[in-house]
Image (cartoon, rainbow, N blue to C red; front, side, top):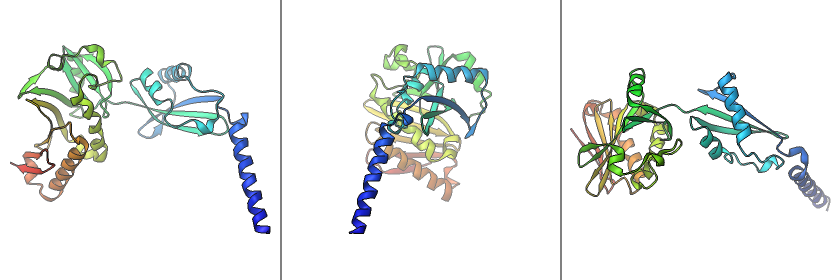
Length: 278
């Protein structure tokens, strides 16, 4: 009987603590702050970062007065990144009893494509972060030492201007968006960053990405600095699964058959069969 009473007391205590925690004004969100990170290390405020911090705090509709327990870790990400397209929310930390710390990092250019005399710069998640005149970007590109990869578009083997090929206006490419609107071929592109995170070495050894449309067949070609061309057929169907399988085949070749990977084509077909040819 004593154990039963003890269990009841414990349950009542837990319920009381939970009710108090969720309803008490002590745990209402009252303070928001922003910290900036580079390569995992917090950086000191500069006048530029201080201005960004103030914009984030003033322009984001934080739910002040609500319980900090119910603030999800990604609740404000979309709004913050829409207002600050060059930045990425790395995470949020709840500092009890009533403070929320937003951790921010800068987006780096990983890919680019050129159209109508403009260079469109994207990060590794294919988020558009800047648009520059082509000549200005070419001068900058020389200093990147191959770390930024080109994206190209082909139709029946002929390289195309993106806007001419797909008939889209620049209005669909506001900062923070990429090739998704009115264009289901590129709904798959966001998945490419999965393989970049899977193996950083492979990502660094990539040379360019080419999207090809041959009749009704859509392909993605990845040209690597090692001389291997990787081809994924029918990217509209189970693209992630095929691409990851092809990457695994590439890693296997690189580890066990280094001579064969000097030059050649690694291809996966619609049935997910992998072929290697020199």
